[in-house]
Image 1 (cartoon, rainbow, N blue to C red):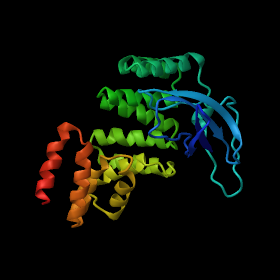
Image 2 (cartoon, rainbow, N blue to C red):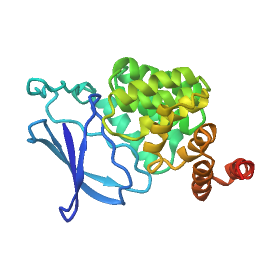
Image 3 (cartoon, rainbow, N blue to C red):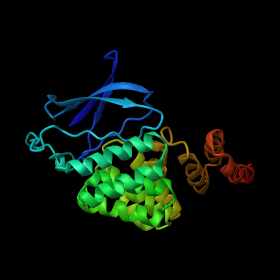
Image 4 (cartoon, rainbow, N blue to C red):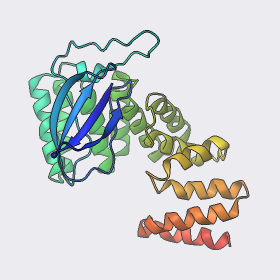
Length: 273
């Protein structure tokens, strides 16, 4: 499946692949209203929906109108799992989820978290709610509860690139780098050409001092979308004896680095001269 996106003037912004887990990623979208159209493997529209993107928007949840829809691939094509989209969420749980979205758009993550906790109490199999609950816990610095929420989401929908990648981020935060690598690899399996799983897997390998050709390729492919990859990329270049490329990567990273992280990069740059 794919999702095509048009702005309010019906100008196409592109067509984006849906992973086997039922999620897709679109980056660098300006604020405004957009028409999203979900298309099956034959290119036929199965659902259209107008969504609003504002300064706090993150993920967009689209419910297909017919929970019984099955996307049947042509022979030789991989089957497409739409388990998350087909799950029948009770009305009360969905309303709590929607309230959580309103709360996060109002920059109130704690209230958003409370609504998500209610949503998963009402529907323990609500994958999106468990996933977003983990994200809210991460945002609030609750790393162990975040891990638990992502683990539950992954148990319910193991083929979701988004869930597996979020699980990898939680493991990274808790410094369980081997587990982060496993989850990131699972996320990459279902991700198509999305950059985030590549970035997270590259970081997990870097954190284990696995300065390999794979690590280098992953970080290189992700650096345009995730500039922070350049710090790890500099270390890999340095390990490989490519000092000028290491310096260039660090200089690029310093242009966008958070103020509290710059000193480490500047010190490393001095050592590379």
